[in-house]
Length: 254
Image (cartoon, rainbow, N blue to C red; front, side, top):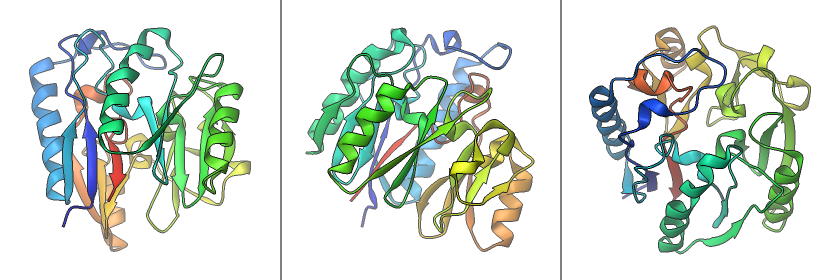
């Protein structure tokens, strides 16, 4: 039985032109990136998710980072309004995909901005990064939408990092893996600091499985020692664009 739908979007031919903010631009191998994306999709499928492709957006270099275009909570799809204006047209394809899934759909509107990569859900609480791509108005709109379905939104101030989930993600038991110097930890439960930057990027795939990047081998080994089952994928070409394992999927549980 499938665990649900995993929305993905193929990389654009213009991937190498994607936005970089906090790192130096380096060359991207598009052919390798496509192979890595295929392997990423295979990992989701092997873990029990039905992979469904969002309509490609070849004119948009960052469109592979589909997570930024929607937030899913309790049958509701909140279409975002990404911080960079040049990314906002990416949302239309995602809108069609979530409507096809039968989800209720609402939208963040001007002057709000919200990137899905800034939203970390643990139970009914959603921590939302503030200070980068997402603004106060966007957070307030999200909070009003989710409150109607029992969700609570908690803003988290960011420092020198693209998205909240660039600096912290959660294990299925609620443990937070973080780079504590990049976020305001005072509003979070206790966090476990990791030494590898990619070590704070995990995607729970169900049961004990955790998607994690090949660039965090020490963290993967530590998680394995705790009884988790790391599903390791190489996303080196996406990391050159400040991407991580969370960015390239939207999971819609069955």
